[in-house]
Amino acid sequence: YAVTFEVNGESQYFAVGPSEWSGGFEVPVLFASRSPVEAGAVERWASTWTGRGSGDFHFAAVRFPQLSKQWAAYTRYEWVVLSLEQGLPDAAALDAIFAWVRTGGRLLVIAPDPRAALESRPQDTKWLSPDYAVRESQPERCAAYHCGYGTITLFSAQGWGFEEMESVDGYQPAALSAVDYWSGRSWTPGSDSHAQSGMESVTPLLGGFGELPLRGLMVLLVVFALVMGPVNFWWVKRSRKPMLLLVTLPGISVVTSICLVLFGVFSQGLDLKVSTRSFTFLDQSAHQATTAEVRRIFAGSSPGAGMRPEAGTTVFPDVGSWSSDFRGTNLFTQDLTDGRLLGGDYLPVREPVVQLILSDRPTRLRLDVTERAGEVEVANAFDGPIERLLLRDSSGAFHQLNGALAAGESRRLVGGASVRDEFDWSVVMRDFWDTRGAGAPELPAGAYLAVLQTADLRDDCGVEVNEVSAQHVVFGVYAEGAER
Image (tube, rainbow, N blue to C red; front, side, top):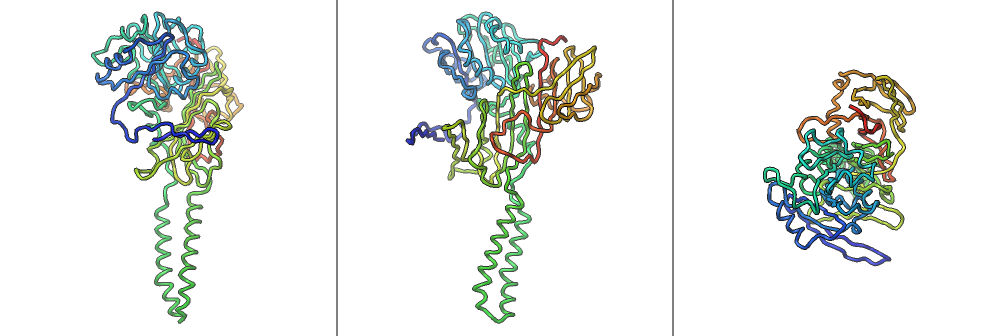
């Protein structure tokens, strides 16, 4: 691929990347610390853990002032490692890193007491509780916790910490194995190992559209051949005016061309059709929503200027869904003159493509929950109806909604041990925390799963779409420090 920047009317050729998959199994890791890393340390870490069955580790080391304040900048990495023995980095950089974690990133914190090192960030340390532990029995000296779709791993060590990590069965560092194959759903395209595992698992569930209506097209072409050939010549011969061929042949061709255009327009439409699945992790106390939307979109006509993602939203095109080959290229454009405007092959005309849209944005939408003497009453403060709802109260008891709940309405939930059996919520739960065959993940106390009828929490990127098929699921956390 090639990257070109245009600034003040001048274009600069910036970089060239590989045009083919390397065939490797890369694990890119970003290591950040306050003091510079000693010479040769990065190479030593990479050689120590590469070739042990867990992939090729590629380390990049930066100092805290070099950390990006945009969470999308970290989607290149599978791991971000913070050495906090000498203090925390800038708050804006930490905000970006934790936003990246919520979208599916993996953070490793190394410090003599990593939990104490993060105590100044209660909005993040609240996830370091048993309810959000990746597994019940944590390895010695390190513990891993779910945070949104991603994980936070704490490793107690002096200095860089990597020198103290012992391998597990000669496989990889203990702190990394704490979440290996137990991690949350990976959405960020960080590496070859699980580049877009969440995207790849959801894409087959999307309905197809935009395909050529081959049966109708074949009928139209057969009719054209019959009219152009036998019928036309029979009629001209019967009229005994052979010069009419000069009129009938182009006339039939023009009419057929118009019919083909109209057939394509009416069969596929001129609007923007979308088949979508969205999954939102909603932290109600922080008013923060992290949404991953996988969608197949088809633009029947020009979508206008393009897509305008809001702040906190990043669009990842699935380049595998384009039909280009070695003779063609895809052109993705970003205009940063006034906000962000995505154009070109981000949204091509009359060609269905798959996109992953990740957003981490503030929101006031919520489910209001009131607990009284073992009973739970909820009020729908979303914009649209709630179709299904499973809630686990602060004591650990399960409750379920009977029927749909319209926006603004309140209702008492039905409790009981059997409510989970009426709908396979374990499948829904795996869309958030994929345990890779290690048993169904458990809904924490003080949380709920809701299936919404409308896409209340996603970013439409300034484009009006017609939903052909959709499912919108919310994993909401309404109570902190719930007792079990």
